[in-house]
Image (tube, rainbow, N blue to C red):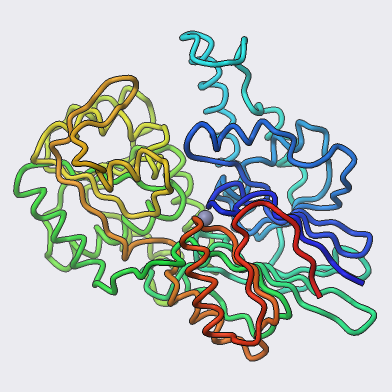
Length: 468
Ligand SMILES: [Zn+2]
């Protein structure tokens, strides 16, 4: 008896996580993510994910980020119905993330029809709010670390992956005629240096492992994050500048707010207005407080009354677009946190248009910038790039551009290897996914050194793997 896995996305790239696992007579889609980034990659969202007759009994999600969950409404639009298993934290985040995605789809189609900026006439959204509501009716939240039976011979459990609230490593237990087998998906893994998130839960045993490799070829500096952040913030405030932080609404924004608060409490920076311009971030911050099971032990907000120790003194949220525009015109010193984290849309673009042309300001990156995104372009500024194209206008780049890699929600290759090393029964088969090709190859090499007896395969392109 063999089991197969079809890697439909996050193979040779970091987005579009979708893996169809076929056990004997039972199929599970692990993650159902959107392809994100440049147009030629996003175009894949319009392709049929699976041949129409493919049987999929259930979807199991590692976490709520859209590159892992955002294709669900499209999948439902194509007629699929079935249970979506995920952790309680993921179930709490999905409504706001998917509704926001549907809103952006509608906006994009409207804009494309108004300006003629589309090959499709008329331009249509990938999915609608109705599709999202249908998805939400099928979510089945699960407690951590409990085996849930999906079929007579297939069970799954969710262990904390430490990446964002709800993020999980998945373990599938399969009853096999020659004994049982365990298949583990690492999911996006965090690390043990986060001030807010619990480190990834160690997995003791697995027979096969699907391992992420976002930072398979890089090490994060082990800097003291509060000191590093406050040095960048302080020099910006001394210039009376605005510190603009593009942040993933879910995860990074919550960590940054706490770092600002810590910097204030330690007397490292003055108390200035801190504007969170992302309605989704504000909601995610509420969910964050509601799920102490995923918080770092000992952080003050892991108890109910600890929220007062968490937010910066000058914290303000912005909801309407008028308030957002006003924030673009307000003079520094101040901090603006806004999404999208990789600059692929959202309100952050208005803040960049206002702040990039002035040398007193700083744009601070603190999350992974995928290849081909505006974020990566601004971060690396190839060939001394001095202008960035935003909303069809060339904006000159005069502001300071800074990066804090130590703030990433992903572990680096040493963190990932450290997590694998703690297994008492390590896998004999490892498949590397969720990375750019160079990161995948490097991660495969690191795992080979760590587990010389294991078969290690980087999934550089979509394809099928056979297990056991
Ligand atoms: Zn993620």
